[in-house]
Length: 418
Image (cartoon, rainbow, N blue to C red):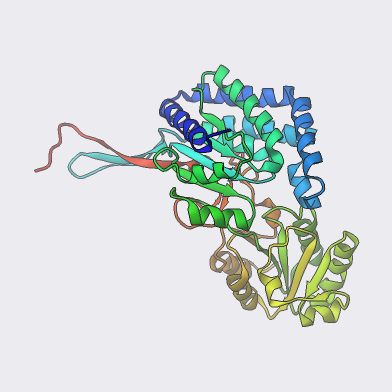
C-alpha cells in the first residue's frame, strides 16, 4: 500500500460513519447478526484453518511453543469463537439502558443512559480469536471497531474479519462497522494511534513492548494491562490436594497466557508437606522451578530465584516459588511484585479469605480457584476485548459494559431554572 496513512484514515472514517448508525441499531438486528457471524465461522472452518496454516508455517521458526499455541486455530478454537458470539447475542443489550433514574424534589427525573463509546481500536498480537471476540463485543455494545492484528496472524485475521463482516452486513449492520487493517506495515499502528477524533479508545493486547509502544505514542485514551504476574498463595491449613490441583492448573494448563500463575507463594507451615508433591508434578510436566532459599530446602533441584524472577511474567513453563511467613507476608509480596492482574488464595480460613479479598488490589481476586478462570466468558460476559488493570472506566475482563459510557438524561414537565 503506497499511502499507509490515507489507508488507515479511510478505514477509521468509514468506521466513524458506521458507528453513528450502529449506536441506534435495533438490538434484534445486532443479535441476528451475531448469530449469523457464528454460523459463518463454523461454515468456513476449513478455510479459516487453511489460512491459519499459512501463518503457522511462516512463523514456526521464530515463535516459542506458547506463542504458536496462541496462534493456532483448531476445530475447537473455531467452535469457541462461534460459541462466544452466540453467548454475546444472548446477553442483555446495554445500549439505551437507564440507570439510577430518580425523581428530584422539584419533580425533575434524572438518570443515566448507557451509550456506546463510538469507535474502538484494538491492537493485538498472535491470537486470531481476538478478531472474533472484539468484533462481537463491539457490535453488541453499539461500537464500530478497527482491528490491527500482529503480522504473524495476518492471513488468519483477514479471513476471520472478512467472514464476520460479510455476515454482519448481510444481517443489516452498516458497512465499515468491522474493519481490519490488512497490512503488516508497522506504520499502520502509528497512524491508528494518531487518529484522534476518529477512534475513541485504543485497547492493546500483547506483550509489554507492544503495550509500552502504544502508551508512549497514542493520542487516544488507552485501556491496558502491562503484565500478568499472577500469584497463587497456599495458606496455612489449606487443603493441600485442592492447592495442588489449583497450582498445577494455574501453571501448566496454558502457560503462555496472561492469567497463568507466575509465582507460587506457600505458607511456611505447609512448605514441607506441599512443596515436594507439587514440585514433583510440575517437574514431570516440564516446568523449570526457581525458588527462594527456603523453597530450595524442600526442592533442592530448583534454581535459585533472583530478585528479577519475582517481577517476571514468563509466559512459559517456568515458575518462581517463595515460602512466606503467613498471610501478611504473602499480601506484601503481591503488593510489591504483582501486576494487579489476578491473584488467588487457597485456604480453609474464612477470615483469611476475606482479608485477602479486601487487601489484594488486583483486577480479579480469587478464593480456592485457579487464576486461569479470569476470563470474560467465565465471568458471564460472553467474551472480552482484553483485561484492564487500570482503575478508571473499566477493570478486569472488559465485556460490553466496559465498552459503553453514559450520558445524563433528564425528564421534565416544563421545568426551568429559576
